[in-house]
Length: 184
Image (cartoon, rainbow, N blue to C red):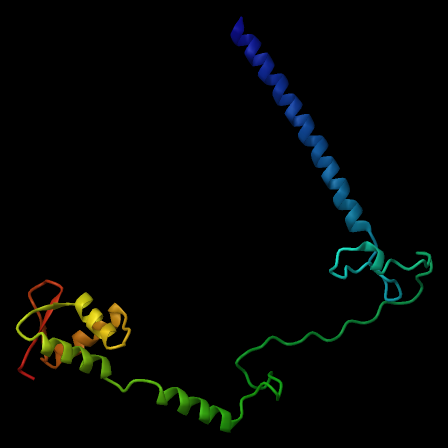
């Protein structure tokens, strides 16, 4: 008896939910239809524009012209602006870099850049100072930071690989420690 009463109650609740959903959906669709059917303001109409101070008295309101007085055609749209690409033909002349600015830009960036192989050289010096002892990458990084150089672990690993190829350093077994090798 109680199970049938629960089933009947659950069916009534489901029916009420479906009805409420249908009414809410219909109201939402009506609101969407009203918004979509509104006409777009024409060029001569004034539209309310907020001025940022929050007072509605100083805002421009819609024009008092009648809506039936719309015989003028809307203005034609401007040509679309092309997308920016790497193709210099589509760029405007003002945005195109000149030969002089490109030359000064590259020379400035290269003057601040470290020389090729500098990371391996610095790491080799650190390994040489800790000569009989094996050094982990974290210790190498700390020693570099004391010198004022910040270097990522992958860069340290790459430099150690370069030193190993030159036989200036070798890895101790399969551990993560490295030792200076005087064979270089």
